[in-house]
Length: 190
Image 1 (tube, rainbow, N blue to C red):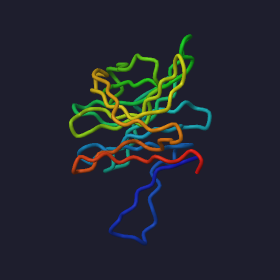
Image 2: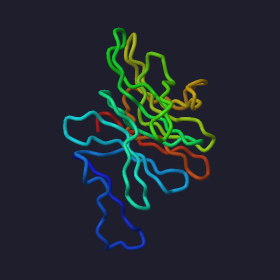
Image 3: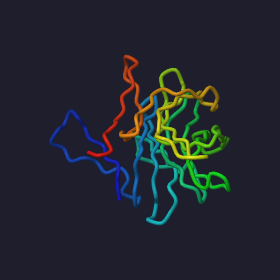
Protein backbone atom coordinates (compact mmCIF):
# COMPACT_ATOMS: atom_id res chain seq x y z
CA UNK A 1 0.00 0.00 0.00
CA UNK A 2 2.94 2.43 -0.24
CA UNK A 3 3.00 5.17 -2.92
CA UNK A 4 5.31 7.75 -4.46
CA UNK A 5 4.59 11.48 -4.20
CA UNK A 6 6.18 14.63 -5.61
CA UNK A 7 6.52 17.83 -3.61
CA UNK A 8 7.63 21.29 -4.69
CA UNK A 9 10.09 22.55 -2.05
CA UNK A 10 9.50 26.09 -3.31
CA UNK A 11 5.81 25.82 -2.39
CA UNK A 12 5.72 24.33 1.13
CA UNK A 13 1.93 24.59 1.56
CA UNK A 14 1.07 22.90 -1.74
CA UNK A 15 -0.49 19.43 -1.54
CA UNK A 16 1.94 16.65 -2.60
CA UNK A 17 1.19 15.12 -6.02
CA UNK A 18 0.42 11.37 -5.95
CA UNK A 19 2.48 9.78 -8.75
CA UNK A 20 1.50 6.12 -8.43
CA UNK A 21 -2.28 6.11 -8.00
CA UNK A 22 -2.70 3.36 -10.66
CA UNK A 23 -0.69 0.91 -8.52
CA UNK A 24 -1.50 -1.14 -5.44
CA UNK A 25 1.98 -0.38 -4.04
CA UNK A 26 5.13 1.43 -5.21
CA UNK A 27 8.58 2.20 -3.75
CA UNK A 28 12.35 2.33 -4.39
CA UNK A 29 12.47 5.29 -6.75
CA UNK A 30 15.62 6.42 -8.57
CA UNK A 31 15.77 9.61 -10.66
CA UNK A 32 17.77 9.58 -13.92
CA UNK A 33 21.04 11.52 -14.17
CA UNK A 34 19.35 14.24 -16.27
CA UNK A 35 16.34 14.48 -13.92
CA UNK A 36 13.83 13.66 -16.69
CA UNK A 37 12.82 10.11 -15.71
CA UNK A 38 12.25 8.02 -12.59
CA UNK A 39 12.56 4.27 -12.09
CA UNK A 40 10.53 2.57 -9.37
CA UNK A 41 9.34 -0.86 -8.19
CA UNK A 42 5.60 -1.46 -8.08
CA UNK A 43 2.78 -3.96 -7.89
CA UNK A 44 -0.08 -3.14 -10.26
CA UNK A 45 -2.47 -5.29 -8.19
CA UNK A 46 -2.09 -6.69 -4.67
CA UNK A 47 -1.08 -10.24 -5.67
CA UNK A 48 1.07 -9.29 -8.67
CA UNK A 49 4.85 -9.76 -8.54
CA UNK A 50 6.87 -6.58 -8.08
CA UNK A 51 8.12 -5.18 -11.40
CA UNK A 52 10.28 -2.24 -12.54
CA UNK A 53 8.58 0.77 -14.13
CA UNK A 54 9.82 4.08 -15.56
CA UNK A 55 7.96 7.39 -15.43
CA UNK A 56 8.60 10.49 -17.51
CA UNK A 57 8.71 13.30 -14.97
CA UNK A 58 7.66 15.75 -17.69
CA UNK A 59 4.36 14.17 -18.76
CA UNK A 60 3.92 11.40 -16.10
CA UNK A 61 3.78 8.65 -18.78
CA UNK A 62 4.59 5.26 -17.20
CA UNK A 63 6.26 2.34 -19.01
CA UNK A 64 6.73 -1.19 -17.63
CA UNK A 65 10.35 -2.38 -17.97
CA UNK A 66 10.41 -5.87 -16.43
CA UNK A 67 7.83 -8.65 -16.51
CA UNK A 68 7.53 -12.25 -15.35
CA UNK A 69 6.63 -14.24 -12.27
CA UNK A 70 9.68 -13.15 -10.23
CA UNK A 71 9.79 -10.06 -8.03
CA UNK A 72 12.04 -7.34 -9.50
CA UNK A 73 12.92 -4.53 -7.05
CA UNK A 74 15.37 -1.73 -6.20
CA UNK A 75 16.14 -0.29 -9.67
CA UNK A 76 18.93 2.22 -10.32
CA UNK A 77 20.11 3.90 -13.49
CA UNK A 78 23.50 2.88 -14.87
CA UNK A 79 25.46 5.00 -17.36
CA UNK A 80 24.82 4.15 -21.03
CA UNK A 81 21.05 3.66 -20.96
CA UNK A 82 20.98 0.60 -18.71
CA UNK A 83 19.70 -0.12 -15.21
CA UNK A 84 20.54 -2.51 -12.39
CA UNK A 85 17.96 -4.21 -10.17
CA UNK A 86 17.41 -7.16 -7.83
CA UNK A 87 15.32 -10.13 -8.93
CA UNK A 88 14.11 -13.04 -6.81
CA UNK A 89 15.60 -16.34 -7.89
CA UNK A 90 14.78 -19.87 -6.77
CA UNK A 91 17.06 -22.92 -7.06
CA UNK A 92 17.81 -26.19 -5.31
CA UNK A 93 20.83 -25.12 -3.26
CA UNK A 94 20.04 -21.50 -2.33
CA UNK A 95 16.26 -21.89 -2.19
CA UNK A 96 15.34 -18.18 -2.60
CA UNK A 97 17.38 -15.00 -2.78
CA UNK A 98 17.89 -11.79 -4.74
CA UNK A 99 20.34 -11.68 -7.62
CA UNK A 100 21.48 -8.56 -9.49
CA UNK A 101 20.47 -8.14 -13.12
CA UNK A 102 20.98 -5.38 -15.68
CA UNK A 103 18.92 -4.49 -18.74
CA UNK A 104 18.28 -1.64 -21.15
CA UNK A 105 15.66 0.92 -20.12
CA UNK A 106 13.20 -0.70 -22.55
CA UNK A 107 13.63 -4.09 -20.80
CA UNK A 108 15.75 -5.71 -23.54
CA UNK A 109 19.25 -7.09 -23.03
CA UNK A 110 18.50 -8.74 -19.67
CA UNK A 111 21.74 -9.98 -18.09
CA UNK A 112 22.37 -11.62 -14.72
CA UNK A 113 25.54 -10.19 -13.12
CA UNK A 114 25.84 -11.98 -9.75
CA UNK A 115 26.20 -15.74 -9.38
CA UNK A 116 27.56 -16.33 -5.87
CA UNK A 117 25.56 -17.64 -2.87
CA UNK A 118 24.58 -14.13 -1.72
CA UNK A 119 21.36 -12.15 -1.78
CA UNK A 120 21.67 -8.57 -3.11
CA UNK A 121 19.23 -5.71 -2.65
CA UNK A 122 19.01 -1.92 -2.17
CA UNK A 123 21.43 -1.09 -4.98
CA UNK A 124 22.40 2.34 -6.25
CA UNK A 125 25.10 3.63 -8.59
CA UNK A 126 28.17 5.64 -7.59
CA UNK A 127 29.52 8.56 -9.66
CA UNK A 128 32.33 6.33 -10.98
CA UNK A 129 29.73 3.88 -12.38
CA UNK A 130 30.18 1.12 -9.79
CA UNK A 131 27.16 -0.44 -8.10
CA UNK A 132 26.87 -0.18 -4.32
CA UNK A 133 24.53 -2.77 -2.81
CA UNK A 134 23.63 -4.59 0.37
CA UNK A 135 24.81 -8.19 0.12
CA UNK A 136 24.23 -11.08 2.48
CA UNK A 137 25.63 -14.58 2.20
CA UNK A 138 22.78 -17.10 2.27
CA UNK A 139 24.63 -20.38 1.70
CA UNK A 140 26.02 -22.51 3.34
CA UNK A 141 24.87 -20.35 6.28
CA UNK A 142 23.38 -16.88 6.51
CA UNK A 143 25.67 -14.01 7.41
CA UNK A 144 25.15 -10.44 8.55
CA UNK A 145 24.46 -8.09 5.61
CA UNK A 146 27.34 -5.89 4.40
CA UNK A 147 27.66 -3.05 1.93
CA UNK A 148 29.43 -4.22 -1.22
CA UNK A 149 30.65 -2.44 -4.36
CA UNK A 150 31.07 -4.04 -7.77
CA UNK A 151 31.42 -3.11 -11.40
CA UNK A 152 28.20 -2.90 -13.45
CA UNK A 153 29.10 -6.22 -15.12
CA UNK A 154 29.24 -7.95 -11.70
CA UNK A 155 33.04 -8.28 -11.54
CA UNK A 156 35.43 -6.97 -8.88
CA UNK A 157 32.97 -7.36 -5.99
CA UNK A 158 34.51 -5.89 -2.83
CA UNK A 159 33.47 -5.36 0.76
CA UNK A 160 32.82 -1.66 1.36
CA UNK A 161 31.39 -1.67 4.90
CA UNK A 162 30.71 -4.46 7.40
CA UNK A 163 28.25 -4.03 10.24
CA UNK A 164 28.38 -5.99 13.47
CA UNK A 165 25.78 -8.63 14.34
CA UNK A 166 23.80 -6.29 16.63
CA UNK A 167 23.07 -3.85 13.80
CA UNK A 168 20.81 -3.78 10.72
CA UNK A 169 21.06 -1.88 7.43
CA UNK A 170 17.86 -0.03 6.50
CA UNK A 171 18.56 1.85 3.28
CA UNK A 172 20.47 2.06 0.04
CA UNK A 173 23.85 3.69 0.15
CA UNK A 174 23.74 7.05 -1.65
CA UNK A 175 26.74 9.12 -2.70
CA UNK A 176 26.91 12.83 -1.87
CA UNK A 177 28.41 15.46 -4.18
CA UNK A 178 31.67 15.34 -2.18
CA UNK A 179 32.00 11.53 -2.46
CA UNK A 180 30.71 10.43 0.95
CA UNK A 181 28.33 7.46 1.20
CA UNK A 182 25.21 7.93 3.34
CA UNK A 183 23.06 5.02 4.57
CA UNK A 184 20.89 4.15 7.56
CA UNK A 185 22.08 1.62 10.14
CA UNK A 186 20.21 0.82 13.35
CA UNK A 187 20.59 -1.24 16.49
CA UNK A 188 18.41 -4.37 16.13
CA UNK A 189 17.19 -3.99 19.69
CA UNK A 190 15.90 -0.45 19.25
